[in-house]
Amino acid sequence: MDDFCGTTFWDLDVTWNTDTPDFTPCFQKTVLVWVPCIFLWLFTPLEIFYAKSSINRNIPFGFLNVSKLILSGLLIILTIVDLVVAFANSDDIEVYPVDYYSPVIKIATFALSAVLLEANRRCGLRTSGLQFLFWTFLLIFGIPQLRHQIQERHARQAHGTENHYEEYFFHKLPDILYSLIGHLVFELLCRP
Image 1 (cartoon, rainbow, N blue to C red):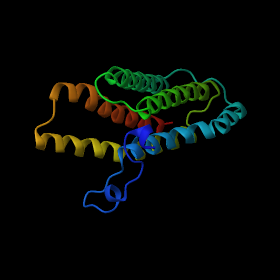
Image 2: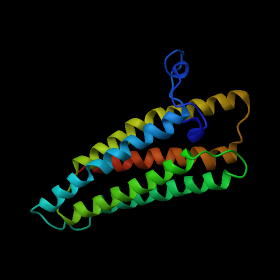
Image 3: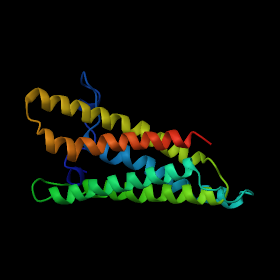
């Protein structure tokens, strides 16, 4: 796993034997990202079955439907930007395979989520338990990642090693937007 992520997968000194427990970066980039994505992919056949079995058909486009699709599209674009930044940085810094695989998995999963949203609309399903659980897991699993980013930024500021422009636009802004958009999609899914 060290070659895949560039760090150890699990370190008890980082997770348990410390005053400020955290997950390793490898754990954050794999488990915390991939588990919600795998959940959505595993239960998609069941969602398709429910959609095909629905007696209602074709809910007209409305604000909620369009908003969910637009926000899903924004997440796909944001993750593509994350992937492009990884490719662009590969000449300057060492980029590990996880920095390529995780965005690709997220892009495919967000695209699947958008397809399921549209399929549910066409089949007359206003809400989806699978989508609700996926976005819930994604938000809950994203909390440790966001916390880690905030702590890392505070540590860089304390040491005076932060490059404000590059740090903000290429690393922090996408993470903040990702969390914000994910929360908005979750909120919209809570409304029938």
